[in-house]
Image 1 (cartoon, helix red, strand yellow):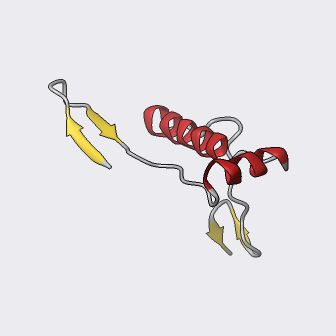
Image 2 (cartoon, rainbow, N blue to C red):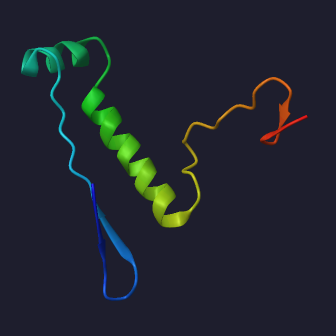
Length: 77
């Protein structure tokens, strides 16, 4: 992860990630056959994170943290 300051005062974030499934291409194919695609999930998660960082608002499909027992609105009573 690298942060670069732009001339206008904003920040550009560079993230480099790699996806290496167990078993290589065969492992990826098996995961896909069984109905999961880890690479696609990773891409979707990165897009949600980008939206949150840029707008300050979680995307409508982002998982919401559920309050713990005895907690209301993030505050323990």
